Image (cartoon, rainbow, N blue to C red; front, side, top):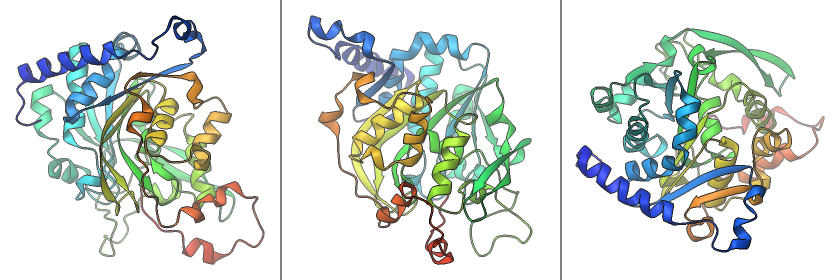
Length: 366
């Protein structure tokens, strides 16, 4: 994206956008008559440029986003699970594509890029990944959520079945914040996959200044992210579901230009996929992302819980796919080595659960 001028960017985007709008999800009158069956829309684009793909994926939602954003502050939330590993973190070009779209609909007047990185200083990650070049170009403010006010919520812990206090960024909970999840398509070692919801729920707990996820972290500094993970495969799935009522994206953008498979969210390997998913129904967007990764949706506990309680649309028969076909771009991502252990969320709680199970529960945040 660095080699693109705004003129060439918009020219490419407009051409791509026209092409995308010419791809119709229905090609018969009978199919057109079935449009009423759809509850949600999700856009799927492909291409060779992240920014352009994100821009085109958002175009079908222009009218509703102008109204939904209104005068609210737009919070563009990347996923920076590791401030040093680009494959694990949101690419600057995806953010630029979103910002170009917001500019095209006149909504860049009050935008921030905000994160609480998991393993170190947030702004160090922003610098490492080149985010600061967006500040002047789009008049966007870079925000470290760890330095902002917080509220307290309570998360479930499966070790003691008690609520535990978690500090959550006030910005992420504020009703005037319009939350955009700019996620990476990755496998995960606890809930199979990281997509748009997980980026918000586990990026919102804050940590103390000076905290780094290493043996050398400063004494007396803490991160509340582990608390939200619930101490087990049941706990993490339940907390993702329960927190989704108050912590969820209003707009989901999932970058699968280069996905991660295997032992994500940090230690996986790249997948050349070249897809981008976007939608205003985060659950529908995450379901499409799961399908593109070739993962069995029935194995994803928190998404099934959210579907059962009406948090969005997860039934593919009720999701209108705009643009490309899922079947034409589905890949089968290699799962985390412990994927069988993750399925414990499906089983009844046993009194024989031991500390051995918890010691095998690897820590890797967002």
